[in-house]
Image (cartoon, rainbow, N blue to C red; front, side):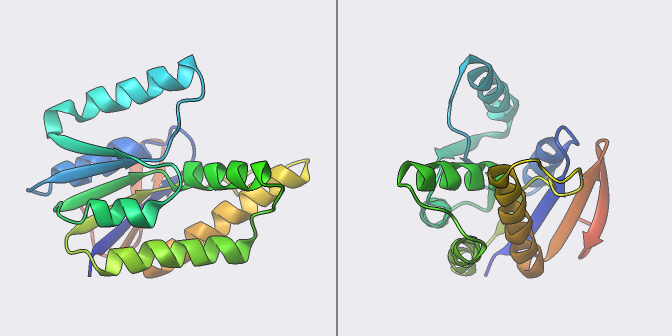
Length: 183
């Protein structure tokens, strides 16, 4: 059964950098599961910078926008797996559901999170999940944004409940919420 670390916080709070530092402090093979699709030039540049930041750490990369459980199984030989990020994954699921004229419910997100955690249970090593804490601001002014906020919040609760350690990032500083000190 994997050791699970959840890194959460606001946008540009230092989550990804901190998660990478944790992963690179663990000896052995590393896999990065990227959930962000390339949607425009600016996003392509962000993805390029993330890739460059991992080059010295000898990372294997799996790009998977939807089926994180399958991606985790593919990465099961690695000593550490970093999934960045769950909120983009939710965005991708919502977009896919919209293309099919469906709504993605909180119950479905819970089930998908359970699938991910089930995959984690069959893996040894450390799995680090990055997510955004988006529900700390104002209430969004439209139903789609409110549903996104709610789905991300529900996902974060499920993942944090199972995680061995949870860290909240604030201005680049880690605040331990659950579990032992990581690094």
